[in-house]
Amino acid sequence: MFLHNTTLLVIFVAGIILLLIGFGFRDRNPGLILLGTGFLATLFVLIKKAIDLFS
Image 1 (cartoon, rainbow, N blue to C red):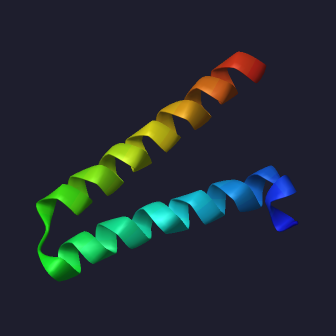
Image 2 (image 1 turned 180 degrees about the vertical axis):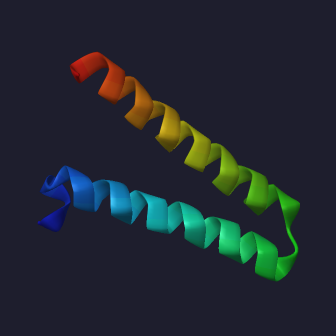
Image 3 (image 1 turned 60 degrees about the vertical axis):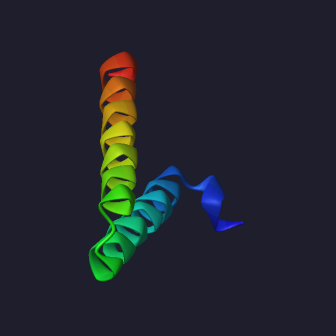
């Protein structure tokens, strides 16, 4: 499966998160926008922590 590649996995997860944010804007639902933004921030923190840990 293509999700064994780390770069593709991050792109896939970021796409799902941006999809949530887009649905929130379309439906004018601030809860979905905040949920997507929180997931995006969590993804950023995880990547930043991994870079600090392994480099």
